[in-house]
Amino acid sequence: MRLTARTLSVLVLVGTVIPAYAADVNSIAADLASTDGHTVESALKQITAMGPDAAPAAPAIIQLLKDKKHYAESDYGLDNVIYPQAFQALKSTGAKSDEALAVAMDYYQNDTSNPGVAPVALDIIAGYGDKAAPIVPSLASALDSNNTRFGEKRHIMAVLGQIGPAAVRAMPALLRAATAGTSADRGEAFAALEKIAPHDHRVLTGFAELVALKPTNSGDTENAKAFAAYVDGYGNFSPDDLATLGNYLTDVTDRDEATPNHDGHIVSFDPAYLPVAKIFLNYPDQAELAMPSLAARILQLDLHSKEFPATLELAGDFGAHAGSLAEPIYARATAYDHVTAGYLQPLAANMLEKIGTPDALEKAKALSPKH
Image (cartoon, rainbow, N blue to C red):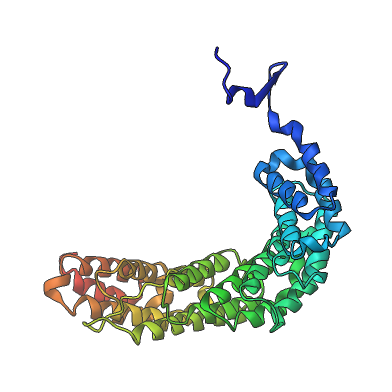
């Protein structure tokens, strides 16, 4: 076998393949103690490029960050390059320790003069989950501050979400953030709240109000999907929670009715509507909260939409609790006989039979006289 530069890049010892540069990690890490800023910067870039293979250099990086040296006058300005690069190198190694978390939190809270530090320090903090709980008050204050840098608030929200329930003290700040900013900002705030407080009426109400706004882009659709997931994992719903969901169904339908297609039908599909409406199947005594919006959608949804047959089937699943839907189902099924005779009327008759009230059964018979 011919030895090439590529084959020489590894050392084979007792059947184990070891990257040749692994032996250089310690010598590169030693350069971090240099008083020459350019030498330190070069070492950090090499460590960053090595990634997890440079994990043995993590203690030296942490020591560099603790020392907080100011480099020689000839290297003026390197402080603003070296310290963000040091955090990037520490992040790339994947090494975790209490010291690494402590130094990241220290820099985020106290080194406000270096704009490059905060984003990478936040990335490191996020990787520690609930162990990063001591930083929560500072992150909450940053969310409320008008001086927080552009883009950093959304980053903070994501970090709080990764900290999880231990970030509960940040809930008020997140709720305030969820009512301001762009749609993406609001969505990020609720995504964090979903992880911090998976069962909280304030979050449910705020999230519902956000999603009930008319979607204007794919970000709003993603918010609706996130709301559906939040509702799915919510657990037991109180009467107040169910009232919130009923209001959501009504608000979404009002929103969609305000922007019909050229035929006057609803064409907007909200991915959270049906999952939320289905919640009421488990609370039949409160099912009437869902009926007005279901009736409106049965009458106005575009017949060719995927949501239309799914809405009819849901009406049937409610059984006698959907008695008030018999009239709109029958009215829609008989509105366009030339279009609906072979498609809608059999489906409508089936759903009316499932509802099973005397009125619904009479209407089902009228739709299928040969039955």
